[in-house]
Amino acid sequence: MALYKIWISRCSNLKSIPDGLNTLRSLREISVWSCQDLVSFPKGGFPNKEGFPANLSFLKISSPNLYKPPTNLGFHNLTSLKELNIHELADAESFHEEEMEMTFPPTLTSLSMYNFPKLKCLSCKSLENLTSLEYLWFINCPELTYLPNLPSSLLRLYINGCPLLKEACKRDKGKEWYKIADIPYVQIDEKFIYDP
Image (cartoon, rainbow, N blue to C red; front, side, top):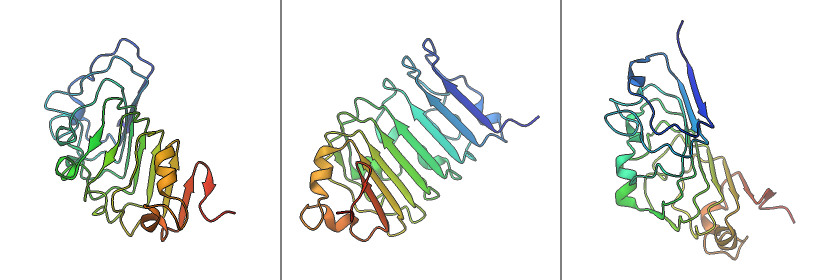
């Protein structure tokens, strides 16, 4: 029987994901969350050709102790990835252009970044070059003050729990307004930006 999904959650004593996931050729979805002590992924690096299988279409990673520099994350090796959810990287303070250059695969249609309490800067061309990206979330990033340039393919943008970014995206006034004004649907703190 082929294995299509692996979900791992609330494993308080789990410290590493076992090797060998790359041999599961039918695997399409991996979701890991609420594993507080998780600090490492399969041998060979965080997902790459020797760690997770390259044909994944969905990946959710949530672990406050897992943070590594974006250049070491290796998401670009997941050449079939459609949805990427990155949660609870508590120590991440900035994602700069030079760090993010090869981080995201061009196949992404959905990207969410949740619970980055220290994230202040997200400055990269990688997002702008994701020409298939349609859905983007920034949730609970209280220190984030501005957006990178966004791809023209974006259909929906959700911002919640990001007070500094909310201020910067005020309609017709905020310094980031011009980046979101032409997106078909933008919701900030559960309110459509064109609602009165």
